[in-house]
Image 1: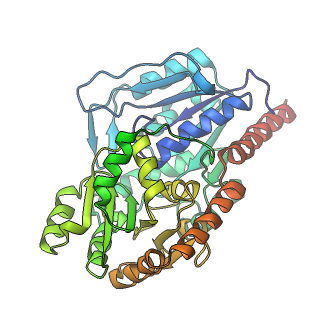
Image 2: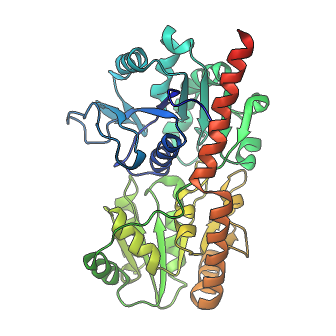
Length: 401
């Protein structure tokens, strides 16, 4: 274990209360590392709407939560990227104040490219956490055209990194961006706390019951309403499902399109959209659903933190078979859930129906998922393995002296 004065600077895209898999993981990781005696400093963007002034830092250290959290103001968001002109100023300010031993960079995050221009940052070892490739998507023309400008900086970051953490072997092996850097890659999955209990209320249960609208077959989807999540396929699958209610939690650029699709397909009575969902309500929805469905269609879905949340609540999952994604490793087909071909709404519906029509099978798969979470994806085990990488960097530095 590193000494208590070991300091790691984590550079992330956002941080809770901003919602998202990367954000929840960063918070859980920082908390677990603090418990292991490693001091964490968090630098991320403000998630609030443009024009609001960001809190520079929070204080206090409740339940080992990292107290050194900095959120830089965001001028505008462009192509899913927060633009923060003051980010390089805050990088150097935090580096000067805390003198971190290691910089842990969570990618993708174009603002992290400012580290390349900081002499102080370049003197410190880097660990890059590779959450996802930036894919030149056929579904999003902007990303496809902008990636050629992004790629040279991405290469420089990877070249500069001491170690790279990939979240699954499948994703590492399929990543063009990582293909030249396997010798410095370590596969460590994402994780959550399996024993984290949300304090829920009777109001949360009433809201959940209203959303389920009396249906016995209950399908939950927690996802950003974005092009790669495959949500139109889930709505089309609803046409083949009887006596089933689907609750979709999330917001994003496809919101209006999905509402129109539900109306056009005349399935509005089967679908409930929830834009804002606090953690207690989400916990109740997970407790009361039959299964969770994540119908993503692209490797931008690299891991699927929502799958771990479902496993924590002992719920089976239904996903699509995305070549090169880690989701097909997180979910064990036929054991903890079902994996179906992408963009096949009828087959998606069939897999959902197998779970909703057989409660005993759904419970058994959910329990198997819970056991897999505890053995493979506990945040304590994940943080311990990452701490070992920090130790190795310290040992390497000592040997070089």
